[in-house]
Length: 355
Image (cartoon, rainbow, N blue to C red; front, top):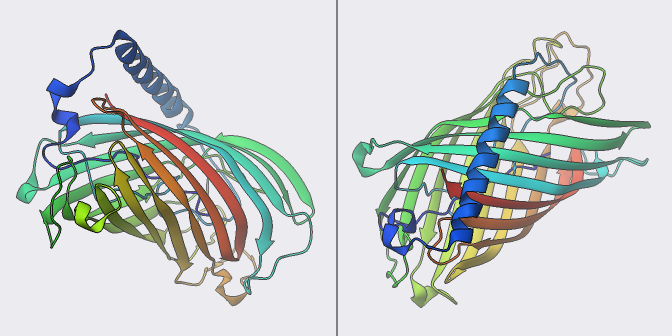
């Protein structure tokens, strides 16, 4: 299923608070928290990279074309100030209560999954500004616990999820496009972005497992996004935002099983109101498999192409303390209208910061 998350950084225009050193807080407790976050990020990142060097094997499943946790608010925006940024994300609840077949009918039996994930993300914004835009790359890695009951079998498993990276992501503010700017440091108007992402088959995978954090194949994910922010004249607060990011997932063949999942189209979207330090809105995702699975010589039966599809909707709230370079987010998603997939609920919290 698409329990996916974006790198949770909101970035204003070239007058970003990230580059406003005069507004930085001087309270000692703030700097202690910042140092602790940096140390935690780099220590866990080092451990994760060591663990990722193992060889993985596994059974068939569909891998997400978008980042774990998804993208939502400010999907097309990248911090304009060059340098490194980090994020710590937790998904303490990912609960799936029923499996739906290719017709959307609930399969009989106690089919359920309880899962929890924790992860780290690294974003690097390059000094080079091609055509006046912003160029970046990112990497995110998650560790998962899952307690599963499916089709009469029960199993508990832990392991790393296949990491997601943006090989490159290019963002450019193209103009106001009719927006009337307000007094806040927001990128009023239209911002466009595009890039190429990938999933690496470094997660835990075993053909005997019922559920695997990894899938044992590479996936390419070309993607494009837009963010449009109105002025306060068309908002209940400082701005009304509409954002979307579309990912086209191209999976490679699983060399262990000779099975190849079909291509998928996954669209993350969000509509939000900005009120000072807060934004409040509705986030969602629509995923559709556009190509049949190819079982190859695996012998796995493929009914109706084994195509999967799903909707997700739920609230998203962001908070950026005044004068701070921290960025906090909470999101809840309810997954529904599933085909060859699970009906699920997911809760996410994240904090992002410059490194």
